[in-house]
Image: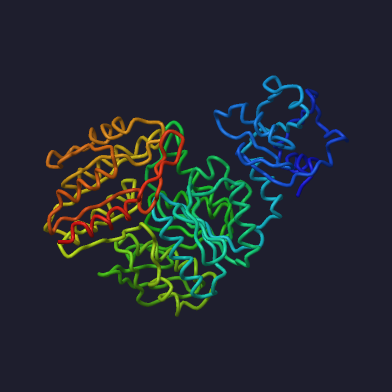
Length: 512
């Protein structure tokens, strides 16, 4: 619980406060008659309001009608970047409006203190990178849970865990700050000691993690992605946002093999961060892996000042790229417990729902379901598929998100050109964009004339089409949706069976 006076003081401390408006009158100092008003809940959703709620007017296209609705339902005060008095009736104007310079940052600052700074009571580990964040978080949580017991939470783009054992489906890679700090509070109350989480570039771009400091921040890799007018206008902006994890971490762990390593290492050094590196055995990293077949890889240590990790490990998620993700998780874990003898078991037990999940039947059909959606992850996954199933065709069912990351359509086309035999272009999360337009944009970038291209915007029908044309020896790959049971369509979450669930059903039907 916070009072309006405490809230405005917090905003002033963070240089976010402008003024407060009550009954059409503007004040810098909170009026006596409202300063002790208590806030007992926070919300940015006008449908979720009760007496005592502080409502945040969030969004580039915020509609003042949402504020009027929130006040009507009992909102005690509101925070916004714009003044909404003319849009409200006389009675609604009596509800205090706190005007700030940045509502997203204000939301993070207030949420953190409203929930009593739960981040300070957790060992926070953040992962950023173009690919591998989810898998690395899962690897880390499994290793640490094996070492410390059920006191490890996780926030990932697939699901969230705040009690060490139960998981709920996630809708954002990194939650909005209100949800983030609320769930951290739940995690602390549930006895969690560690939290591994994904940190997206948008989390920094949109201040979802503003004020959040990590004990360990991991930068896995970087390649162009999320470049669009509504996300990152340039690659430089994308890289800069991701690099904020260096600014906001005590210990920084960098992939020695990635592009722009020197830039990121220089940033870490100048900011006085402890820098640890991991990479392949062709690098000069502190911790190095040597990939072998069937998920086995060796790890060796090359820095006597750090806890040593040496020996053979195995991951049960196929793909050589997962050796790097696994080593990132091992590197994190080694800094938290200087005893790597049991790391291997935690790693081996790791399963990631919807991540390189294989389905087979007695008829010889093979399908792989994965969340891959950009060039880096698609090309690595396709490369693995072609290696494992060299004699058949690679049939890919894929789309791209609507209204954002438009550069990804070119990348999808490039990956399909290099590896696919059949490309069935379909819907992913269309948002407000016509899926035909998205698929035509992908098709334009498929430059290999030997790739058979089919457009079928009905995703269920597209996956069924893949099964209809598949023969023994072929491999099907369903990209981007994994086990998600919703599709973003015109501002709503439309129920969807899920790529894995549908593929499992079809495997049984075609099991002749």
